[in-house]
Length: 304
Image 1 (cartoon, rainbow, N blue to C red):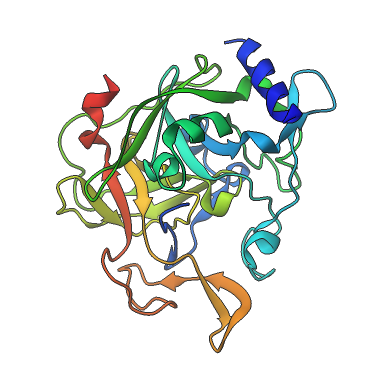
Image 2: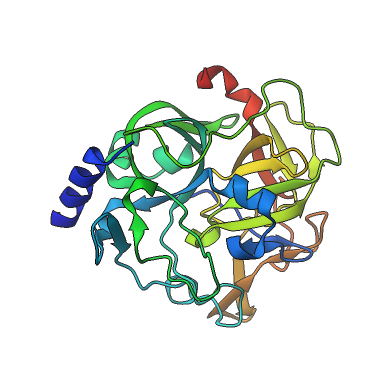
């Protein structure tokens, strides 16, 4: 409790169970921040990781915190050591993105599926720049206090068959980055190139482009073949060309499958499908045939 109290005090004084979201379609397009283009890195600056407050402790110097975890993708989820990012730390629970100076948007099930929204608000912080700036960086060390924010209030949170979003007011205005531009009206055109930025499997920020719209028919959602995993819940889905937010990543296919089909306890490998979300390693699964994205236009009225 002392670590939590320390974080709450310092942040207040500082200056201004998931749904399945997963799978790789065709080529694995996930990249770390240091591997990505400048335009996508700029968008990543305005995305954040939802991390338990209990993991934070004071760092080695004033104004920084560390994360008390050694759980890697391999050790936390029995992922085979040969899989991408297997040795990276997994600390994030969900993803979110900045839409106003002190407002974050994420998936509704991040706040409503495993506890009361008010309880989640108290127990999780939002962290910007939780990423890999280089191949050998340690994302658990020296997190700047100005990049860590607490949940002040839940403006709106819904979880239903047609809606899955939460709008969170932070404890202070975010500095050093700008709110993202979101689509306010209309519908994403078929064939639009898409990018998702978030924290698949709780990892440091991953930028994954190369996606497209697979199904544009549902009124409040669309389906894509972006490479996303649990932890991507709440990630912003962008029009790659314009950088405009088109939606919120909320649901998808199975993440991982046993490396030895006859042995469910064998280490896990990524569930791979083709670009049409068919022929998956996990076998045929129910609809949607891909990753489900809530249209940002369906919640714009609450952002005003």
